[in-house]
Image 1 (cartoon, rainbow, N blue to C red):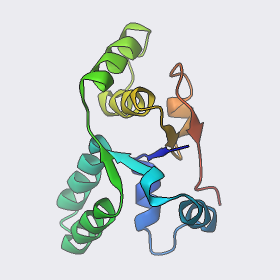
Image 2: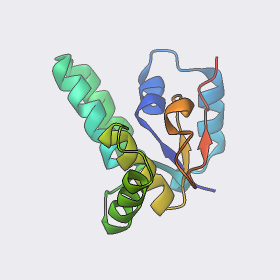
Image 3: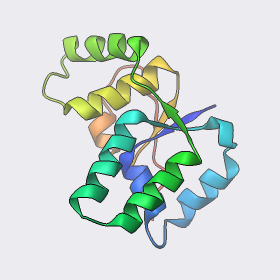
Amino acid sequence: MAYLLDTSTLAEVLRAKPPATLVRRLSQTPTNQRWTSVVSVSQLLVAARVERKPKLMQEVVRLVAAIRVAPYDLAAAQAFAKFRAAGHAEALTDDVMIAAIAVSRDLVLVTRRTQTFSDFEGLRIENWATY
């Protein structure tokens, strides 16, 4: 089983003291099964720039170098269109893109925002950052 770590999960990884459950699950998951999306990478880089924190930018770059990054490709675009047409017109574009990437690559989405993603058909969700 492979996993797509979303922005909220990666933000937890970047904390000074990430949740022990998250650290444990990450350590138990082989490197080649840990993914994030190009959308989450963009969100983290934007946050680092907006906050004007060069150290955070370096930490994001280092984190991304240690994980596989799934692109937004044609298969994801097709899943995106399916989600939008199925009634997710009000959802944030980035969230729909992340869900589409996960579904199109058969990845389990790891997120703290389970409620946000719970209505996407075919999307499997786990929360590894419980306290």
